[in-house]
Structure formats: structure tokens, C-alpha cells
Amino acid sequence: MVSQAAKIVIKKTETLVGLIKILYSLLTKKRTVEEEITVQKELEADRFAVKCQHKKGPALSVLYRLSNGQLNAPSHFTIDGSFKLPAVTYEERIKAIKSLPIIRKILLKRRFYAHRMKNLPRKL
Image: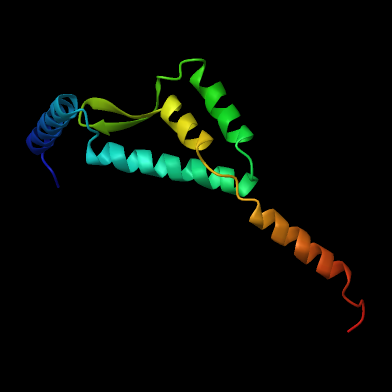
């Protein structure tokens, strides 16, 4: 069991580590490891949404609505001790989605196989 004093020490240590990460982020203009992982997860989720729907419109529409017109606002945070660090902005996600290619091959395969399935004999 963790004592009350140990919990206080842990909380202060987490806050100190969070402060160091913020200073590192501000001085180097780079994201922390946790932020970068969050960014990659979100961008991968956006890619998956576009891939499944074969269009960018729905994903873009959702991000525009969620941003309430503030595209530079962060869409996700990482929490480090007492600090909330912005991970990725709506604008970054929208730019990433706009740069994605739309894969039409899958649609062509579906049409090809749908046509072949129609021509199969009913009784085998």
C-alpha cells in the first residue's frame, strides 16, 4: 500500500517531469514523445476513416464542426503531471487528410467481382 507521503512525492515528481517536458518542447520547438505518439494515432485514425469511406468529405466535415472555426486550436492533449500539452491541431489533421490519395482500386475490384457473381450459375 502506498502511503500518503509517497503519493505526494509521486505527484510532485510528475509535475516536475511535466515542467521539464514543457520547457524542452518550448526550447526545441519539437513535440514530446507522448505528443508524437498521440499525433501518429490520430493521423492514422483519420487515414483509416478516409480509406474506409473512399472520400475525404465526411472526415473533413467532422473536423471543421469540432473546431468551431478555430482551426489552430488543439484537437487532442497529452496530460503530464499537472500540465496539459497540446498534441495536434485541427489544422494539422485537415492538411493531412487533404493530402491523402483516394484509392479507387478497391471500388473497381468490387465492381469486377460483383459483375462476376451475377454471371455464376444458380445451381451448382
